[in-house]
Length: 434
Ligand code: SF4
Image (cartoon, rainbow, N blue to C red; front, top):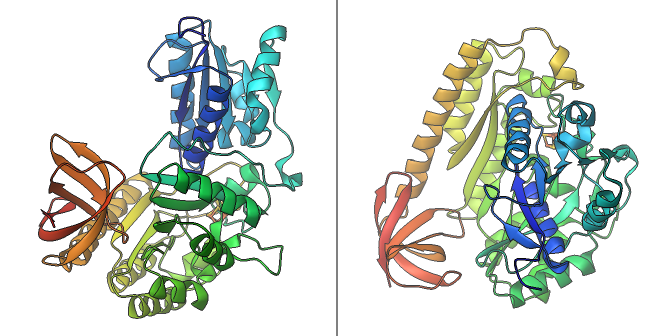
């Protein structure tokens, strides 16, 4: 079929790596059915907006992109999916021009659903009760979309119910991809040329939780033993789920990236309790100290929420103190935003926007300092870099411990090369190819 006769589909993703991974998988389903994929700014026959609802801002951005698609082609089919669609279908139904609302399940049949819908041509909502979801939905990633780093979703759902978080309501209970399926999918990604695989999930540390013979460690060990993977990375893991086996594996197998993204959220015990986070500041610090001692060069990054209800000056000062002691190499800062239906949205002592702003700036400055402290240790050292892009003769990529590195050279994307680090510049290390 020539491109002129093909139907055109444009996709847009908001939010986390899990959403990005799912959009890639959905893109692959459309390609398999001979659709042409076009960029979101272009005129398409079908627009898919994969939404996020983690904050108010995410809801607003999701609505903006829906409206943008409707404006670009008012005659196109507008399909809204993802977390915002799952939790707030009623809000989306009020936007004129939205044709289909599909929550966070049933997307393996999205092309069929769309083609069926075009015959009936009536706005429809497909949002099932996610609390009853039992199976992990298989959405194989189209392995040719990126050539360097692949995201492999192995886990779905969360049952932790942190009091600020809407995710358990949008993603449902814990479900895990079967071990065989993970190994097969990772093998396909390796065969397609990917050097690095990042394991993703809504609550990755809960992988295999309902199977006593299976854990995240077992999954990592099997992937390293049974595929020719060059690098394996965890996207994010809760502090209570990092055990000695995982630390040992990181210490002994250089393919297992020395990088842990461990959400802290607050460094104050009173706030951690109010958040329903199952650890305290001392436990968090002990864990990081242990990882850093056992795995030299390990990079620890985190998420932090400023302005959670009840966060007074003293609580914030405790957090700052903990962050300084721990020494994160990066911090993703979020300003607390009440989500309808979560316990914290009804808590007293909500924090003023201006204070959140001020605290957010303080944490961002700590993040910058943390990066400088961590990265500067690597000046004059030789590191291995996975080349992700070449911009006018300057190659860019990351080390296994997730340091961004730039160097002059002509290296194909996806190669892992050795670089001698010479300088620390603004936000990255620069060096010479060896
Ligand atoms: S662990 Fe907490 S913050 Fe993370 S998805 Fe689950 S409820 Fe949300």
